[in-house]
Image (cartoon, rainbow, N blue to C red):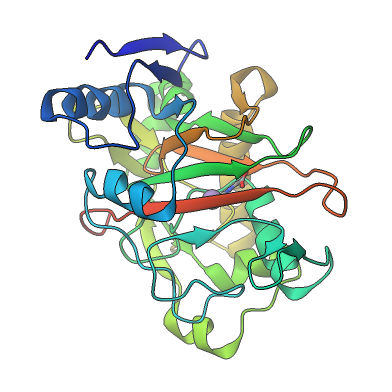
Amino acid sequence: MALSIRTLHENFAAEIGGVDITREVDDETFRAIRNAFDEYSVLVFHDQPFDDESQVAFSRRFGDLEPVARNRVGGGGGTSVADISNVDPATDTILPVDGEVMTYRSGNELWHTDSSFKAIPAMASMLSGREVPPQGGETEFASMRTAYARLDPDRQAALEDLIAVHDYTYSRGLVGSKLSQGPQQEMPPVQQVLVRTNPANGRKNYFTASHASHIVGWPEEKGRAYMEDLVARATAPEDVYTHEWRQHDLVIWDNRCVLHRGRSWEKTRYRRIMRRTTVAGDGPT
Ligand code: OGA
Ligand code: MN
């Protein structure tokens, strides 16, 4: 099968064509996809009408999947498929914008990397557009690898030994969402290094996100401002790839080195139904 690769942004992100990933993919094709993932960090596939089962099967090729937290706001606990939508599956109607579920999900509109608040942060996420709004609801991506490469060597060296605390209770608090007692107990703050290296190609990046509350050994406000500056450097408009969704797109991103955020849309008017599978990382950072 002839895989095509078309870059979407000067520095990262590529569209992959010529393959149906809803069916079993042969090993050679999978290796090419895996290599493209390490190279481009964000991969876009069009016309992939996944259901949960086929999405899980393809995702599993990358590694073990993270289970959805048992007490996750909005349900799905215990499965491998997270519901990222504004429609209540029980009633098939649009969820209230200021209700608990949509407030919780609005945390996705802050720049973040998935599961950095877990001791072993996620490797990859795969988001499937099952029903997408006619406008708005884009997903934006920014490369912390490119941003790291632009830092001068002294600044890069200064980052090397820093450790950040990532705290889910902190980041959900930023959007006014309170975690219920269960998830809070499941998710105490964790520590992550600030510089990561891709094991396949040796390329380095910094690693921070809206979940990062402070830097170990620094006054809280100083660490927070320092990391906000790193996020700002990575997310300048010209460095962002904006994905405008078509129905049946699948987008895969590398949580080890890219930031992402969802953009808002007319949530009371348009349905947006997305499903996410998350490939677990292979160890603490
Ligand atoms: C996610 C996420 C953003 C979006 O699924 O992890 O952050 O655009 N989604 O839905
Ligand atoms: Mn996310």
